[in-house]
Image 1 (cartoon, rainbow, N blue to C red):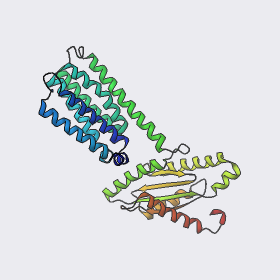
Image 2 (cartoon, rainbow, N blue to C red):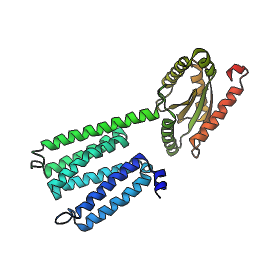
Image 3 (spheres, one colour):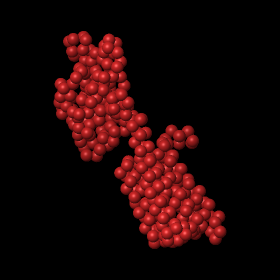
Image 4 (tube, rainbow, N blue to C red):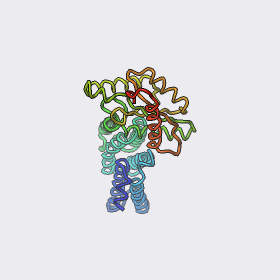
Length: 320
């Protein structure tokens, strides 16, 4: 069972499940408070069981459910804090809820896209601030609201720190350091997102494979620094000539993949011919239309086959 969960879980699903476990533990501890739980035994037990089940579901499926687990966690946290500040009004619980806010902000910043994270966190903070004004603001808990304001600023700083960490991590794991293009992992993430979008709108999408001609000769005769210069130059040319929605990735060495959304095979071949005609270094290419039921690896393999047929069709052996 544990091996099966480890195989299916991701960092996102583990973090989401951990927050649900924390909620479960807090709800369980409320059962032993003097006078009973804040929400009453039936509601507290029901929420505790729901949180425990959610932890297991998110652990296994969190990454496959998109942003919904994060939305559920943020909403549950916001609702509990609003209750703490308005109906329940227990100072110790209010402080405990405030401690959770920076953790939630980091979680949203790291695992969601920046816009979605900021919108969700702004909603939580607005709800908390409104509840505090209606409930506890002006009492000893917030010292006239000054500590609440400091908390809000600190929480937003934590959110931006999480967003920065996400961007830095994605750059280091999704971008080729030499050319600035996407690497294999970055290609997979972007390409499948475009594939899903193309399927929903029933639009074509094409995949092209590029392999540089005589690149090994450059490395052998002029050195690897010269080869790196060629790679960086081509990457810059391709980025300026293609659309922002187009995807360019370096698989390794002198092999590149281009994904052209909203582009059928005929149009894609015209794009590749234009690129090749304005290139500072010769290269061979092959292009296929990516079918909706096909894996990206299969489409790349088919494009690779077309590319090698392009090389083989040349009469000059030095071009092969």
